[in-house]
Image (cartoon, rainbow, N blue to C red; front, side, top):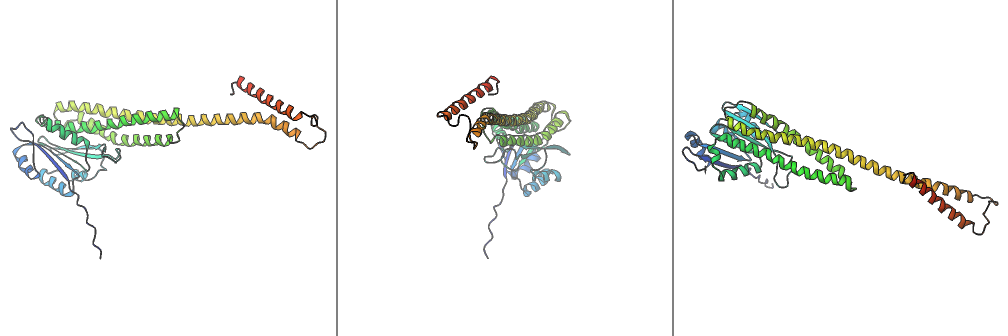
Length: 333
């Protein structure tokens, strides 16, 4: 029997930043050190990329996270939300997927566990937000001295700001579509408009629950978030509202561009029909004249005239000129 193909084992990627009690300098720690660091009261940020069931079991044993939240960690279909389990604030946000070759609208859930002593974040794929926060944290370790809720704010702000990148990209797309609608005769315009409308629908579906979750964080009362951090979260809420308004504006713009595109098609069709009507009107008297002189009668006035054919051609050309002059004067042409 042929050997079964080997199944590639999925492994998670761990990052652990630690600010030990009494230290001002940030350091890294290994997974095995985490229980002792918790006992020592160190502040930590643990980020897990592509968590597995083994990772969730470790999180449950080490931090005592609720089973329901750990189920959400392994599911990217969970809607953005925030929930409290005892002294842990659990937040789910849909982060824009900016990995090369992947659709940005297929969001990646960033799951964040927040307490006064640590932040644990998980995500199924690489995220630009966590990478940037990690790089900034290496330069500004003082972020953790401001509290774990400040790092939590930085993660939320990073996730929301990536949506602004998508809005800027959509603005360029709509400018291009608008140019095609009014300046060119591109048959792909309709498909482009429908694609952008679909993008707006996906973004609205993601940013709506995010807006509700951030609003609750700003106006609610959570022991894990200090009042000064709630003030910073208002800026995040402002960005979310701006994104939500922008998405709605682009949806309306997409509808307006579709109406304009259909109007342009209708106008072009009307121009074609007008031209065909003018041609038919011009040809009608010519057909009448040629029909008369094409009848099978022996006696037709002028039929035996030596220059009759040329006289008739000159008359028909003059008739065409007169009809065109009349159409131009009547602003039909």
